[in-house]
Image 1 (cartoon, rainbow, N blue to C red):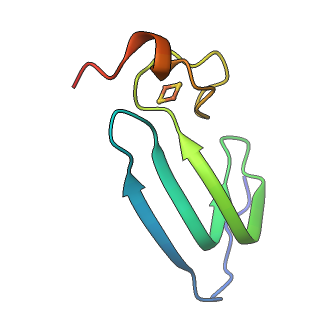
Image 2 (image 1 turned 60 degrees about the vertical axis):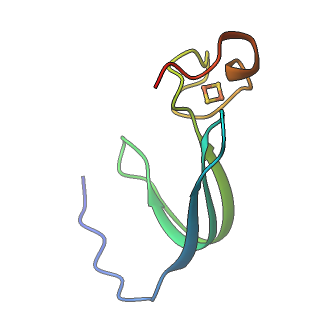
Image 3 (image 1 turned 135 degrees about the vertical axis):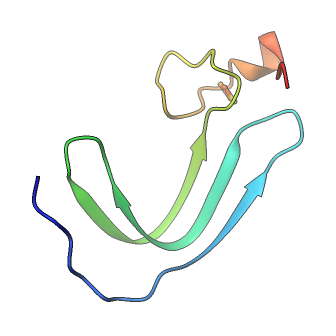
Length: 69
Ligand code: FES
C-alpha cells in the first residue's frame, strides 16, 4: 500500500445519528482497506449496529435490529 502524502485540507462533519449510523459529510480523504484513496465532497454512513450486510456501510438493517449500545 502506497502512503498518501497529499496535504490538501479536509473539512467534514461527523455525526452519530440517533439510533442509526455514523454520518461523515464534507470534503474528506477516504482510504479503503486496499489503500485506494478518494478525495472530495462525500456523504458516508458507517454502520454501528453490526448488522449491515455491506459493512462498513449502513444498509439500514439498524431499523430492524436497533443499536445495542
Ligand atoms: S447502523 Fe445502519 S445497518 Fe448498521
